[in-house]
Length: 334
Length: 230
Image 1: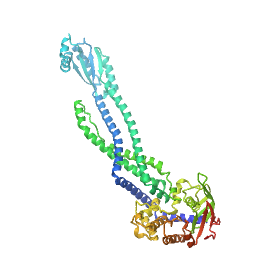
Image 2: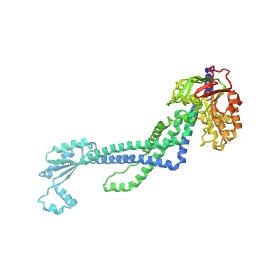
Image 3: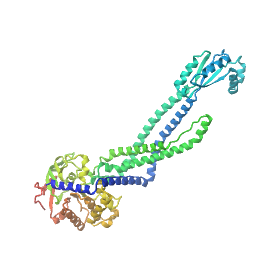
Image 4: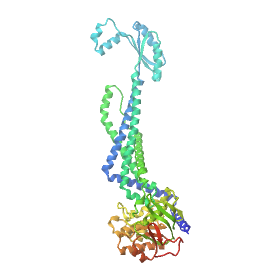
């Protein structure tokens, strides 16, 4: 007996399907998605101040690590630039004659790894030192010239890696009459180590802030769930699936993400514009081609997408936590 | 269409809402469910809608045993059950049309289909001209009719009503009951929980009477038997 109505219900559903084939089904599904997305966006728009505040919180939280990452990238660019301009300085023993120094310079410049050698003889070195150090008077008290002949060696492009330079240093050190070879790479290594450390710190910060963003969005979406409680209960009552009920809130989270990403981009551009003057001056003072690079179009796109994903994730957390438990049981009073 | 086999519902405390309830409702049958307040009327309705699960016994709706229904299947069962509430549960942030369209929306009906069926349902309850209004602008009786239109818009085989005439004067109540009668004539199984005895007597239909969780009248286990009236 009971099976008869059931069959009836099934055939009714079958008829439904026949009337709305697969294509139409998919179309109405997409229409629904678009409608929900628009509706969620409109709701955010209807409370502009509250939405803007959430966007700003998110924007700040996203802009901070991205700005630090950009700075780091620029710093790494700088150290790479300096690495390539590394020069090897070889100091002769004091009793090496100028002729011997010339021979050494020729020998070195014959090496495949060397682009050029400049010989600075002791007299020239003293004159330069006198002029630049301001220690003229002190130098007058010295009996002789304390400075040796010096060779300034510029490695070829191919030999400018750390290993290449080290090999060159060993080669020069092994030569007769060379007292000391210096490569001023130590500070560069320290800078690299520091930027590595900084990079890790920035990533840790980025992860923490991303978690904060997820929680902020989660909380905002929770409030939105509370305020639409009746609607959720009715939707569940008339047979809305969990994913149907979740959908508007997931879109809300995603839109929060989009807005937050946009605010972050604006903040980044503003600070870039604000910093660009001083940075240029600083770079000129250091005779460096250092420049703070802003986000390219792909970076900006990635930022927006990440922000939207974080917003979606926050909404998902809130929905999982608060929505699935909601049952229309309490709607039908005593 | 609806069958209860030895259904008992016990809540966490020692409060037992339903005790060994047996009854069956046929397709197209209209029955009343009555009893003092707290007798278990709402619990019985909630069991049909899978808002609650029985502690013992079996609830069968449309041939489907609800006890073992997985949670994710519940929405699909509810699409076959229309519900009308005393406080009608309309949403005041949208038009009458959008309220009635909700059951179709959750099913993913196409906009064209939705428009046609919503207007048919509104026409049935005599509110076709008010589809663009907010439910807040309607009278109590009209709001209740919107609630009914929403309950029947997707042509469910089962229609439940919980005190649908609770806030209405007798004339409007008669109107509403008349509507329910029409639905049962086209094959919908209608179960109306009410304690409006006058109304029940007037209609002269089968009446299930609950008393402290026991079904004391109208609950024949002979499904589709000649049970009727008090």
